[in-house]
Image 1: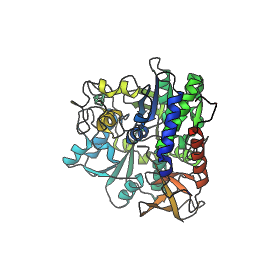
Image 2: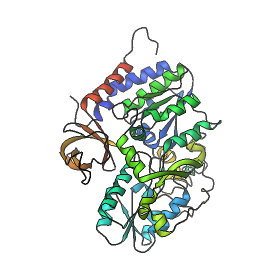
Image 3: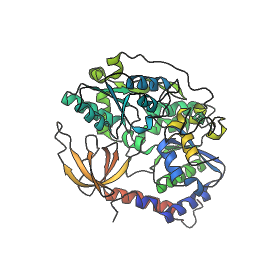
Image 4: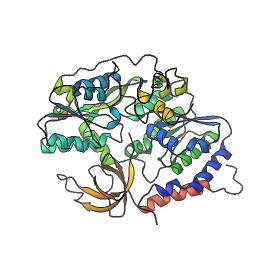
Length: 364
Length: 86
Ligand code: SF4
């Protein structure tokens, strides 16, 4: 019988130890594995996964933190909007301390009088709009995991005719960014730990073109210790056998085709666009924007905001960190001028950012 | 950001084919009853199933058997099979 808390059986220590042993036995040479997803970065630290692995297996973090890859220009627009009279900005909490191009963040805007409220779900943001005459803006930042949730909320707003609910959309989709990473001849990565909850929506098949084209071993992983360790073992076995295939270690959540209902919902509300990723630059077709029929919920359209291109913070090496070329300790600002309390670059701002995770768990 | 937590379904309110309403499942989170939206879930759940919940919405339904199958695969991977070097 499985317990109500399904995480428990997937944290079994004895089984973790045995999986780790299998990894030790299978590794033949130094390996660099990239965990694409910021939630994996956090899980790997929280569960002490590195301490179970051979020293020769290096885990590096990829561009999988949606807040970290949101461009400074988009952050500027969010802060500007929050400061407009008559606007209530509702947001997930991890956006509060993200600095825009001038170094100013939402927390400071709030201290200066802007109405900024933290919500747990976009449904709460919509609820806020139901209960006020003012304009409620929600910065729609996220990958495929979050996008259908926001799509459902837009459809609900539409169904109820709630016209004071606006989105500032900076959605990003994962596969085009992986394509850019893998096409980089300088990328020194032996295998990808693919994101579990993005894959719950897009399905395991979504990685097949990447595995085929670049011969890259790809294994989809969940977020408990057994999930991460079994995925690493599958990666190591593929590498050892010279394979580059897609395998799924998170079968209880991820199917071949993902969540068709959620994918339809995304299609109904959003359409592809080009998007600028912090650290990676402009990637064609890597964003999603509201379809024309939903433009009355588009904050950019309603407030006439034009996209801005602003430079990344000086000295910040996030671009190289997001592509696995350097680790945070190779950045001269790490833990000196750039700390979780006073972040300079995007990788330090979100709790899932690589620099923030390294700093919090004091990895030297 | 892509954090999503498994929660066990205790009750269900609403129906799959009621597009105009917003059906929810009631789950238990550390002893607190919470409602979870079912707008985008891939499979309609039943009481006793688990939901993977992200920002208040279920993104996936799984039953105990599917979880067991996944766990069994991991056990097999962990087992050292004689004659197998890795
Ligand atoms: S430590 Fe700060 S400045 Fe350096 S790369 Fe990380 S986020 Fe950028």
